[in-house]
Image (tube, rainbow, N blue to C red; front, side, top):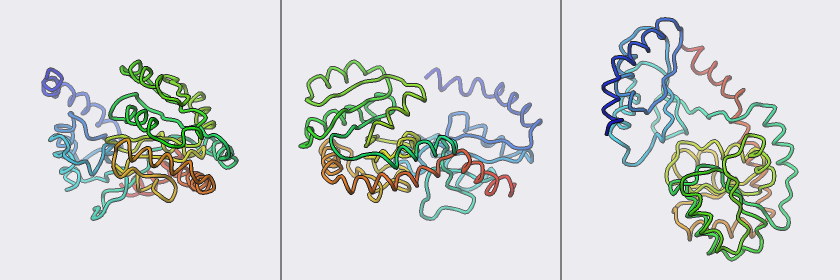
Length: 300
């Protein structure tokens, strides 16, 4: 409650700071949705300068969003701020000022390195599965562990690696100790270490309850990891049954079935992996800068 009150009590101070910066720049990007957006969006909308665009980082089609998110989405959808709005995914009836932008997570050099590794990845024998993210219920960690107790192809799995940490890690480690599959919790990893996990892995699982667009899917896909992911937000715009496995229902039975399906046809899994490499290239910084220059800055 105190955090919500502070949004109002600090508004005048924040706007003064924002005004000082806006008077010095030619362009500004505002990131929504955020509590501050309830007063920052109207403020920048009333200004003639600087030029602007808004990045909506959340799920553009979220079911039952918080009221503050709904207000900001309505504001942006009706273009009261008079700018381009970049979002995750492409949706029906999308207005011309609303643009699909991929969130970058690697440069061209990093992508080419990963692509070489991914293109040579061997899908024979026992396979490694990974998860990358915060160890929480929302990210589906408990769901993964429960699904692993239900699969019929456990002997085909070399290891399941959880990269990430969280307050419930100890609980998840205790649960995993009773599962007859090698499960490793690696904690938070630096860039080089997480890339090593992607290089070793064949499948990445992320059965989240809600997402904007998780960059870890694109990062792992660059290494040829085939995603098993929830069909939420804009994920299916990039990864679907053509190059991965979509969870229409986010439960352990559905996830167990997708894991078994993935492990049952290695030739098909390899085909999906190669298709993932092509999609991952969309998420380079170079591609982002190109889109920024062509779709926003040149039309400002």
